[in-house]
Image (cartoon, rainbow over all chains, first blue to last red; front, side, top):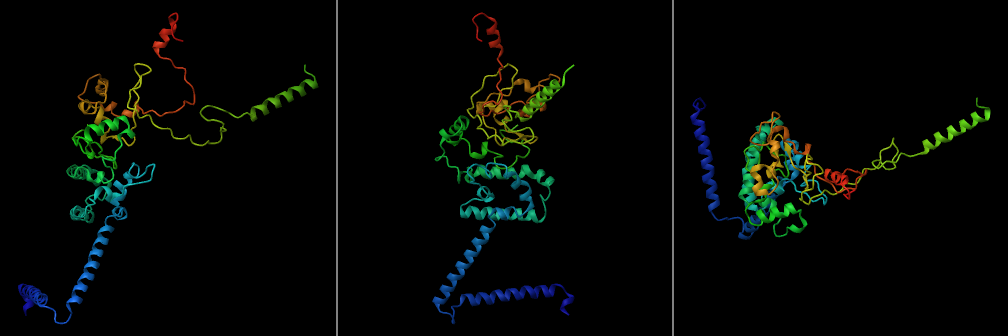
Length: 212
Length: 156
């Protein structure tokens, strides 16, 4: 029998798939003899709407704080830290949620970041930071990634809410007003250069520029 | 010897005295009128002084107070937010006063290259100021005023 030789059924399995692909291509490239062009166009349109809607809905589901804090890595470490900061608790009750700062809002950039995040899914599945100790060990590396991202896009996620044009420096403390005029308005520095640790605790800052 | 009317008078006087003591509410500047066995309402939070202008020290050894808000500043084993402006190498950019050289000294009086670990936790001595009316007044005067008092026609 052919089962004795493992190479034979594998080849036939591949051959069957190839045959299916060839037949499918044959069907796809021939004009339909059953459905009218209007039916095909309309069905394609509806299917497109359903697919696109479904895709974006699923994407937005992964873009919620509920989803992010569904993993204990986020819930017990960074989310717990966020709660004490001004981005969670403040006088006006306006607050930032995880994706506001950590996922670009522009669609193409968002998709790019979501693809990168597949590594974070891998990390969750294989438990690379599944304990407090492991998280603390990796904290600097994780923070460096985010700082590099903010530096590269000129702190875009900060600026989605905090615009330099709308910033009234007369309403700021003299210290903040001086620093913003000197470094922010001249584009010498970007938000993250000075405001590290604004929403989470800092990692070991030895060796980070500007820190002791 | 006190007679019967004397004892009666004494008892009345004692009773009147103790009842007036009992009726008296303890009123201190810190507690307000809240009785000792009760907890009063929390005092309202007062605004923090945030002018970034140096305050005069009351005596030379006084740790300078922090004239700005330090909300959310992390000072722990991982980092020291204060030093990202007040460290020697940072003062050029920040224009903040440098941490005093005395803070570089270890306990044997040897100067280290940067802030000594025992002087690392700034808020042990340096504190921000809130705009409050002191609940208890203070008649502290500084040394210059004292010297001035000793001279005829000096400040009182």
